[in-house]
Image (cartoon, rainbow, N blue to C red; front, side, top):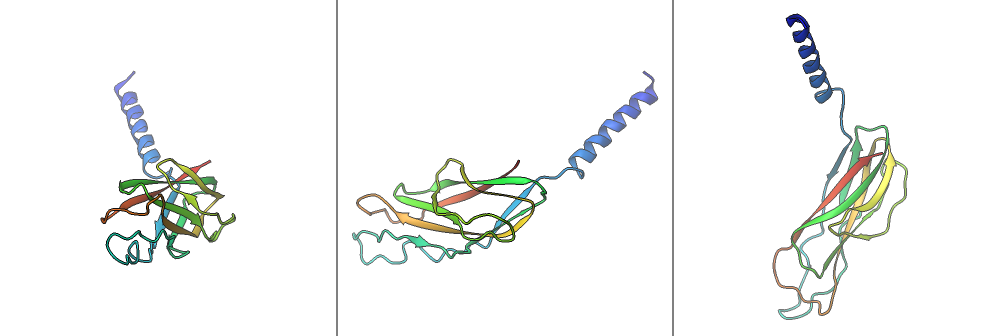
Length: 160
């Protein structure tokens, strides 16, 4: 192989890599915005040593808006939570309250766990899909230690 031909093949491979990785392919995107929780949990405790009211404590029906872009295909959304500091007696549930600008049904509450859970599916670009969260205290007795508890809700979209 001549030196000129080797340089040509190398240049072609490099250009193909640049085109593939920087412009002619893109991934489906999902964004979740406008999180609005109604306040601290629980909203009030009557006095030290008393059981906390079990709730439920719900966010607004449009607490989170999900937008899906960069697709012309069918897709599914799964959801799970990742606890950073969480009490076992706290149960977080999620539901879709509107379809936004796409087809589909609203869903009933589903309890979030660390395992992926099918949430909803659709096709093409969709925006303003509204999500509501619900927090409940479970177990007996309904006593939890004072503190800050937190978890992260992960939405994963898969193009089919």
